[in-house]
Every structure is written in structure tokens, then in C-alpha cells.
Amino acid sequence: MAGDPKGGSYLFQRMAKLRGPYQPSRGSLEFIRATARDLGALSGATPAKVMAAKDVITFDGMSREAVGSMLAFWYDPKTKRTLPYYDRFPLIFVVDVGNGFHFGLNLHYLSPYYRAVFMDKLYTLASDRTFDDKTRLRLSYSLLKNSSRLAPFKPMFKKYLWNHVRSPFKRIPSQFWDFALGMPVAKFTKATQEHVWEESLKQAGATLRRR
Image (cartoon, rainbow, N blue to C red):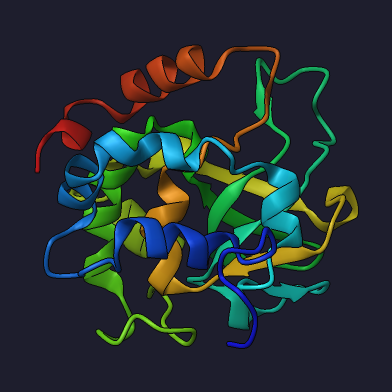
């Protein structure tokens, strides 16, 4: 890709240069642990920088081709007045697409550590081992519901109405998924992220702690 990775627009390339490339054989959790001392390098990541990044793929519409992709976008829930809390900037894996809505796993509902634990489970569903722009996860609600290993999905599983999406979708290529796991870009409203993580861990139960 043309351009200078040091520039502000190449957010993920800059992270990769600072930390080195993700190695699928190591796993997300080991990647997070091995680079914990460099987490400060991610502190400059913001929703605005993700939306402006040139090393992600931008699209406005939604189709079944997006299933298994990691997306970031701005969202304003229809039921926000009755929700105990919600994330205005979801980071999701698309699970299914319907008529005017899609379902996704919002990774922000878990702490970075447990995101990595769960991500290691999700990597077994990768469509290939090249981990490039074409790699997706083979996701479906049926698979999530019937897999004991993926049982912790419940607190992350959310429905998104397209007429409440407030930005284009930004698809993050698979070679950058683990960098995205650690970005402090969640925008929770009505609760702190620490409270959200605690509640999610209660819902996920012991299955998330088992590796």
C-alpha cells in the first residue's frame, strides 16, 4: 500500500511497525501478553482515527458478504433510553444479516484480556490461514449457540438497525484483528467500561475462563 505508515492515516500499519506482525501460531492471548508493555502505543487510537484510517476498507451498505468480518462504526441505539448501557462505537464480528439489520459480536463488552481469550476460540473458525484482506470467520448464530467453547458469546451478541447506524462501516482486515482488540476506542454510555466488563464476565460464566 502506498503512503507513509508513520502518517496518522495509516493507524494499523503504524501499530504493526511498533509491535511486529501478528503470528497466528502464537494466539491472541500470547500476543497481548508479550506486548503488554507497549499498550501505551495504542493510547493514541481513537474512533476518529479508526474512521479516518487508510488501511481499513470503507463501505456504506451491508450484505451477507460481511458475515465474519470485523467492523467498526458509530451507532445510536433505538432503545437507548431503556438500555442499562450501550456502546456508541461498536467493534464487531458480523454474525448474520437480515432485512434492515445485522447481528454482531461486540468485542468491547469484554476486557482486552478476555477479548484475547475469546479471540483464540474464534480463530479456529477462520476461512483460511493466510490472514489477509479476504480472511473471514465462518460465523452463524446456530454455531455460536451450539458450541460449548463459544458459549461466552452471549453478552457480546447485539442487534444493529441500519437506520440507526451513524457512519460508514470500516472493515478491519484480519492481519490487524489483534491490534484492534487492544484499542481503547469503546464509547460506553450510562456505565463505565469496567462495570460493563464485570457484568459481561458474570454472564459469560466459567466457560470464558477455561482455555
